[in-house]
Image 1 (cartoon, rainbow, N blue to C red):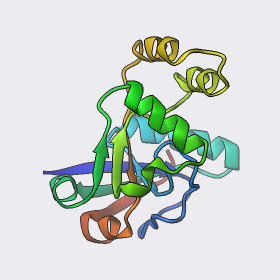
Image 2 (image 1 turned 60 degrees about the horizontal axis):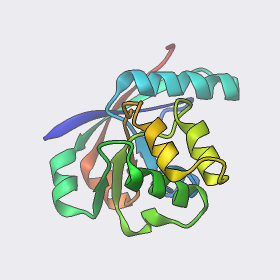
Image 3 (image 1 turned 45 degrees about the vertical axis):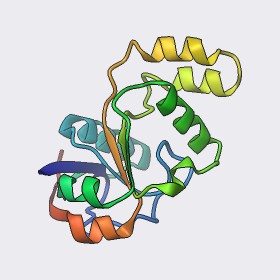
Image 4 (image 1 turned 90 degrees about the horizontal axis):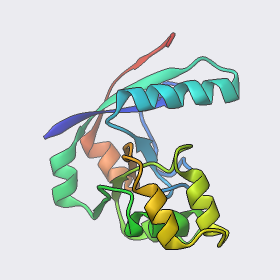
Length: 163
């Protein structure tokens, strides 16, 4: 199955690069997209405000089945202990993502980041953090870590301006 995915920001990206991102993000260093248009639009506006540049929305088609069937993939379906541990390890720079080509799951956004930070600082137990996280339905982010996935299975569809 092919799915439409989005990348919000301040520039058109027709040829994404997996190594352009920062390594200590939720799912590591890679090119981030989401299948949620509204989430990408919100992120584009956030980045636009920070950079003082116009927001843009890049749209792609991802051959989801080809990726899931042929690459080392990790898919988180909820905010659970495994997801929390992965996010914490990534943010600490321990690279739990290094064994994967593709990672998909909830984003550690403003709704949940305080809980993660308190857990990382040992100001909240892991069990309490999981209890608080269970109150939220995850958004979606996809991190494309392997450049081959981008080159073979991600097709650039265009960029929307003047959002």
